[in-house]
Image (tube, rainbow, N blue to C red; front, side, top):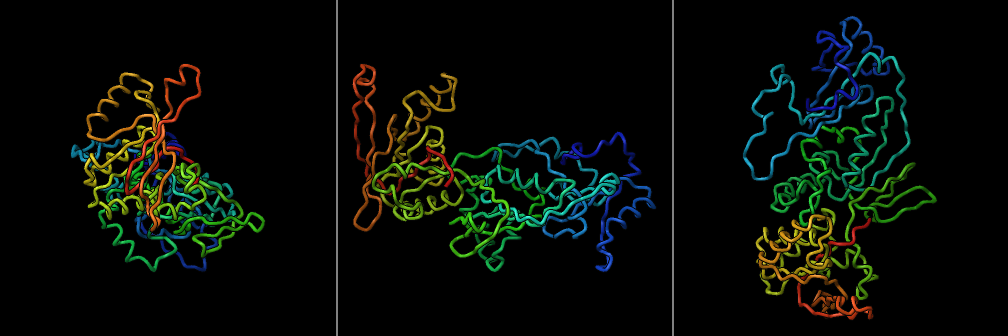
Length: 423
């Protein structure tokens, strides 16, 4: 019930006595190349049509299992709200596989049938490089690793902050102590299922036990870093200005981040990392959100406000998480690009009015219809103040050219969360 077995197997055609599970696997390396023949003969002598294998999430399954068996994708369970202690209905009943010595639903499950053994399985040695850690990238990797007639041994994932189920196979194993320290830090607890600690939660992103059940750590090669350059002529990419990786197929599936800095004249030609050093952050992925979080923590004692500019839902979500960090609402300034009460992504006018009411009662200083016009930096290169602008709606309705209303707000950080695009 926890895996999509119905996509591959019709249990009306298989009796229970023709299904078995492999608990231990040991094969002399001399006979590895005849593993398909050995499996087929074992199933024939044992009168079995389907074999299952469920390995521990921290141990790599045998090579024969990864090459010959097909991985079953996990099925999403009912989710309870965070902080709720009410158990789900499935938690009140013991799983049958647990009584038989099986593992939990967060462990990867593989299967092999006689039909798959009688059909050919091809090994494709092309190097497939996937850049990013969005929900789309995990859906793609899950599909590539579950093709029953293909074996893809050269799949690479380039990601800056790999989630916990993928960190045990990251290329920088020398920093294992740093990874363990990072997992126990308070900052990692604010990472809402790896969607970004200050951004809107992506409901399509797999949660932790689903990532373990995917078994991606045993099927792909994880490289920790960021994409810095692409050599299309030689089919190679540069990771973190240090590592060059060649590719046959390159897929970009990164998280989308705010791109408002490109239209701000003072920082239009500045790299996002340089903007972060000044106190200007483009939110949207876990790395950018974590940099903003650390900046806010270091300047928590100062009295200047934090400015959040973007769409109403994204800006209010960021403000709510800042309040959860201990920032007083009076120190948060929201520059919302929508006009009151026109809220993007909320079509019901009643809900939009309720949303506006709750925002006005929260104690936040809100400027509706405002956007960032420019920023001013101090002599040391840090953010000093933000210039906001707003179009005059009265002049626009009369047919006259709209007049701009300008406003200057002193601040220590600018968090942008509106124009999402690939970094």
